[in-house]
Amino acid sequence: MQILLVSIGSLGDTLPFLALARKLRDHGGDVLLMANGHYRSMIESEGIPFLETLTSRQYTDYAKLQANAAVRESLRATGEMLLSQVDKVYEAIRERYVPGKTVVAAQGYAVGARIAQESLGVPLATVHMQPMWMRSIHEVPTLPRWMPLFLPRMMDRLLDFAVDKGLAGPINQYRSKFALPPISRVLKYWWNRSEEHTSELQSQFRISYAVFCLK
Image (cartoon, rainbow, N blue to C red; front, side):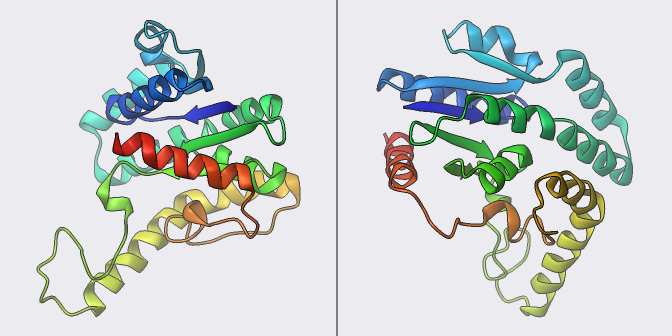
């Protein structure tokens, strides 16, 4: 099985994918890890095939900006960083995808992988490593449990509004190339959406991924 792993974030995003790549390789998987070029030497030193989605310089510039930027500027830069990798991720998957033999595991904000799943039918497992992306109005980490539900609901919608304002437009513009309909509430629904018809290969991969994470 060919397994394409997509991590487009920081060291905290990349290390778990590197561990997963090692485990999958040791179990006979043909693994490729896509990540930003800042971690090329670390990944290749483990003998894992690597594909760059963001140059080391681009990532360093982004990290420096994040260290000093105000919230609004930080969100804008993050959106630009994520969107700059959409086409690279999509094209890398498209070029390597062999139906029945290829699966993808990607972070939610690797939106190129989600678009590849929609347009090409690539089996995709979405990987979240931050508890904040397991969204719930009943178990909000930063709020006391007695808080009225309308407050976390309001926060939930405000988050979706802010993210959609920055990301939904460019994502929909890219998706339109494949005649895909517009989407909204990117974080709440789209990046976690299940496919209508889950293939046997995808079901097997999801089970295997869960087993590897538990070991």
